[in-house]
Length: 109
Image (cartoon, rainbow, N blue to C red; front, side, top):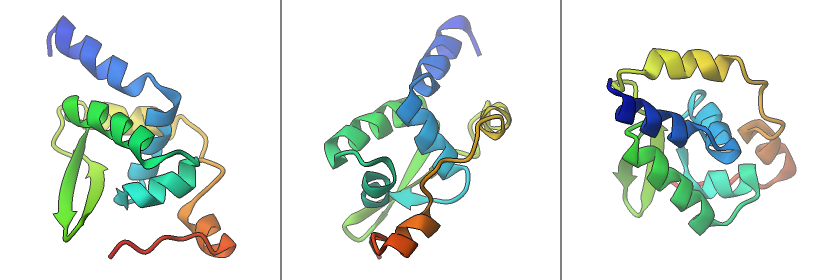
């Protein structure tokens, strides 16, 4: 990794919402519609964050019909560092379990 690659990597993870997205993805693969509920953000806003994470090659996407499922890129050279950094953060207040309890869990399958 050179200086420009490190700069790109750090910029990609240096946003509060992207950190939350990465923290959620460290637990499970998710669809944008799930992020809209978890983060209380619009789909276009989340898509912009996902675009930046994808450009930094921190996430992967898998098409399932009309849905896109996002996951952490376990093949990224800095994956172990990312997982360690995410482990230092507290757990998010909202979880998939809280969405289910609130009746807001979106089924994308």
